[in-house]
Every structure is written in C-alpha cells, then in structure tokens.
Amino acid sequence: MKVVAFAGLSGSGKTTLLERLIPALRQRGQRVSVLKHAHHKFEVDQPGKDSYRHRKAGAQEVMLASDLRYALMHDHEVPTALTPQALIAKMSPDVDWLLVEGFKDSPLPKIEIWRAPTVDWEGRPLRFPHDPWVVAVAADRALPVPVPASVAVLDLNQAEAMADWLLAHADRFAYQQP
Image (cartoon, rainbow, N blue to C red; front, top):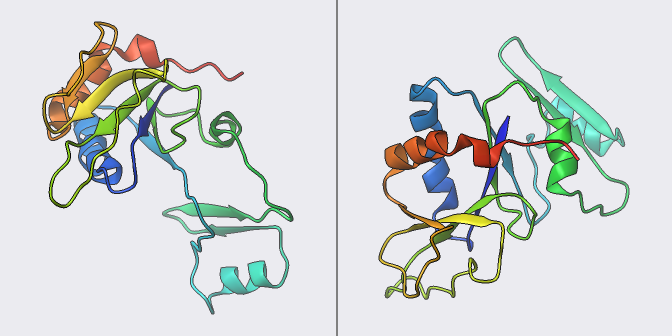
C-alpha cells in the first residue's frame, strides 16, 4: 500500500482535489481508500436511526452493515488523539493507495495544497520550507519562493497529471506499518 497525505488550510481545495484524483487513480486500475481527519465532533449516522440510538444508549462501538458497505463507529470515553499510523493500522491494507486528508503535522509523505491570495482567499505561507515530509506542492499559480529539486510542483487543477505523477513516483509512498 502507498500512503500520501494532502495538507492544506481549510478551504484550500483538499477535498475537491481528492474528488478528482480518486477517479483518476481508479481509471488507472488503482484501488483507493481515504482517511480524513475531522477537527470536531461529527455524526456519521442519523438521529433516530437504530445505530444512532445504540450509540447514544452507551455502546462503545456500533457497526452498521449491509451487502453493499459497512461502517464502524467507535466512541472514545475520553478525548483521544490517535496518530495517523494508528488509524492506518485499522484500515484494510488491500488497496493500492491510501489518500490521507489532513494530519498536516504527521510524519507521512505529503502533497501540500497551496492557493495564491485572491479577493476571496487570503492565502498563507508555504509549509514545505519547514516540513521535510512535503514531497510536492499542488498549486493554482506559480509559487512565490524558490523550490528545491526534491519538491515537485504540481498543478492543483490537473488531477489526471497528478495521478500519473503519483504512479511514476509510487516507490516514494510505500508504507511500512511502524
């Protein structure tokens, strides 16, 4: 399995990019999973549904399963920060790629998502100069600083080309469970 994280500010386009990158990888015969970091409390089941009622009644884990999919919900009794590596260990290794959205401070090879400032987007400094795990920057415009040869610059709006780049550099993303 290859693992690559996508790091960028909220609203920078991580989810939109993955929505385009997943089918691009699938068209190339790749099996893809996603691990998404959520910052706040979230609900994956609907209030009033059986799984929600079981969880609210105190079940620590509830699995919802059908012939098409299953979802496992696990509640922590106290807030628990899990590392991406601990979460990766819970996912099926039977995929070619695991795309990780978020976990920007993790020690995983990552593609930084960067947008130039606009009227609607204030922009932020690039993180690659301070993060040795950034192997590429996906940007919507030319970067405002020099980029070392070890960091690729990709077009944020070209998911097909990004899929080709990932496959060409797949060895950089081979994951070994710690």
